[in-house]
Image 1 (cartoon, rainbow, N blue to C red):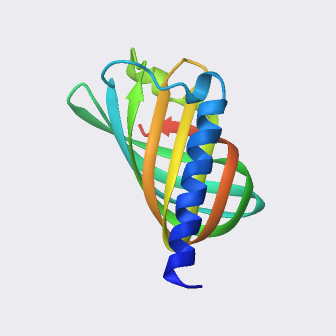
Image 2: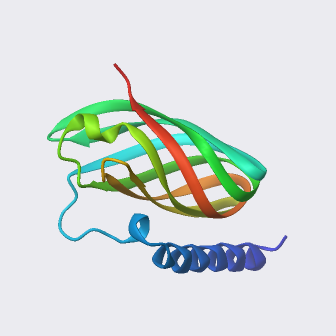
Length: 152
């Protein structure tokens, strides 16, 4: 596949992701104001229709860093890739609220290397907006859910 075709695929899936994210109700509505925390995560995903995502990360909240693990499912995905992402966390009133099941929209495109966008929210109202890069072969656009658990 030529680099022009790869770039076009990445641009198309990114635009699709932004449009999809803006069309989903609460999880995709970007919060106003400054984020309460930031996250960095690494992991992987593998999928044929339904995908599985796993990884670990660091939450920076009130000047301290906390390690966490993620795992979850996504739909409408094909391929496999490694993921590096960073993002902002909103509506985090207390550290314990970070744990839980998050649902929202994820889009990603990678042919060798690519981009991803995720907007998710948990039952405590914590909202995470991630963007990152991926390496591998992956096309994904649609609903997703992950479980987040702070390490003890």
